[in-house]
Length: 382
Image (tube, rainbow, N blue to C red; front, side, top):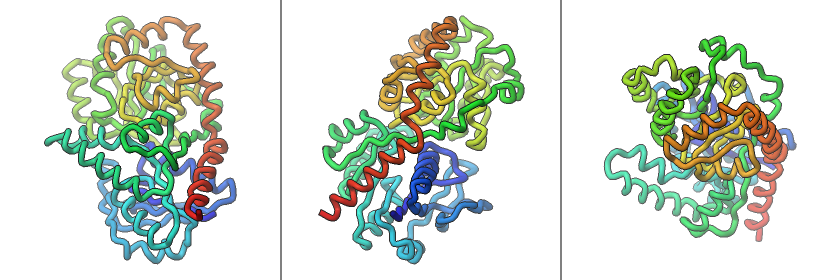
């Protein structure tokens, strides 16, 4: 099968969407399929893999870790026509997503869409003027986009239920969790990362993700102040970058926490497992995720998790490996302190995490994605 993936973001950008595309592409190719990616170009970046089609874009990676594509159909049409895909898989409801709709219509092939994000919540965070109106407008944009899709892929059961409740989409939906390359999390060593940041002998809490307001970082920082009072040797390691980084640094300076909270920035994805290995506990305060791929990665490293009770985290932790708490600093802090104070409980949660994460292997997730594609093709033909 030839599959065309349309995305607003791809390598070298680092994000959950990019990780999802790269891992599914790896699995699909291993299963004998052709996967062609249509994505924006990035300045001074050249692809090493075949079948990656880049198109003119405004490179904003220094400020926002994105490259804004110029969505002109004529620029892409020769490449898409030459591929002759069996279906198009869109990753976003705008820009390249709009082109995906147009090409699916003109080529008379089904359009599959992955619902990666709770878009209306993100709009409310990023539009400073009339955020509620921004959320409503975004919600309407997504509703209209879903009408063009032959099939919708969601990463968790919670998001499938949300599609039913908020968008009235009951059919043509498949739950396909984003996979993790479990082999990269075998036999990883913590010493290098701990030495780099002077963490020897410290208790380390780890957050991995975009440093953005909607990720719940303010609540996490409030919780950390309570945790640090009870366990002065604890350190918080933030792995990632994003638009909220400067504000975080200012808050840390005001609190006098520069030595206790470490912003490590972004690192190549192949180095990330070492950061999980260096931590004692993974902390996840976000309430806007559709799955929370970083939770699964933490589980793959055998890292116990404390997460806010929200879609994504609820689904991933259903089989164990961590605890869920309400979105309140004092409750979040209490769970973290209780686990750090109980080494036996930490070991049990670690064991549960390693067992539960096996269902997120690349081969298992790819098989589910192929079933979604086959369902879309069968319903299209009928």
